Image (cartoon, rainbow, N blue to C red; front, side, top):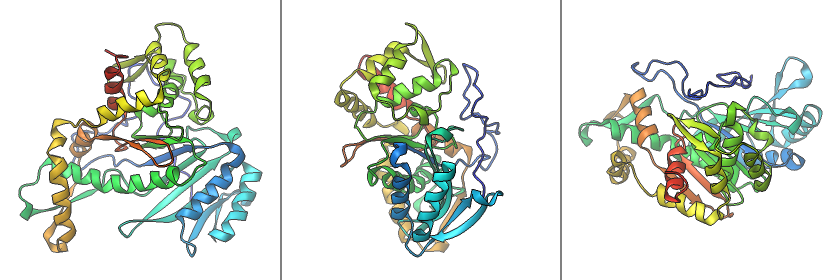
Length: 373
């Protein structure tokens, strides 16, 4: 067992007008999809209680009788040990105390009757690097399944309904994982999900979480990472108070800006104005914009539940499998919705498919507030 490598060197700075996160050198005309994305989850909590928070998370995820596969650094060759949860806790405490790092593989059951193979790593502050953050979690669930189920008797299939089915397959499990990390664990205060191995700018991620109910941190952290291609390790700044993050943004010269994507830029003044707003005003604007639907997605709001209900009742021989393509991925990126969830614990979750970004939602909200044109 070895931890997956990132697609790019973490210290390399992207050219100012390129897209370093999605441009992975694949042929967009290929059939089926040449790149099946992954889903990675990142979270931050204070180092003082990081390991115990991680152990509580594992205890909530892993069945009592299940076993964990743990990387054992003491062996000198990163051998693995396989232990039950009650045996694993002392081992992980010892590993983290000695090395400031643990890596675990385990099975995680999600409804309806699906078992995901999960990988998770935890780092102490002095070992933060490779853009993973303190907590990194990934699983064998691809945000774009290799095959999409459909039934011929439902009528001719379309790219829209096929893409929506692929979206639904991934979203139900991804939301479950986000809930387990953030909604049931008070220790993690911010983080998110993306189809990449590194913790990238929050406004370019698919989901972000804010325990304090203020999503303005997304903008401040994105500025610190993207401004002048500084590529700041987000795990080192995610826990800073918002006032400190604002001061770091203000330290830039008047009129400077950061590249976002597709030629769009966000200025220093726009970021400062947004993060200076009352959190409720910012959340309300995001909610208004999240309620809007892309025209291609509007009719799917009623069509998708009907198709899913038919598939759930169907016999196996009545279901055909359609190969997922880059056209499905492009449709999800362009048309699928984003959501703003007010959680019972007082936190805010901005939630979308990991293969799309939150930037369109942020751009619309900042325009609605009169901050951007």
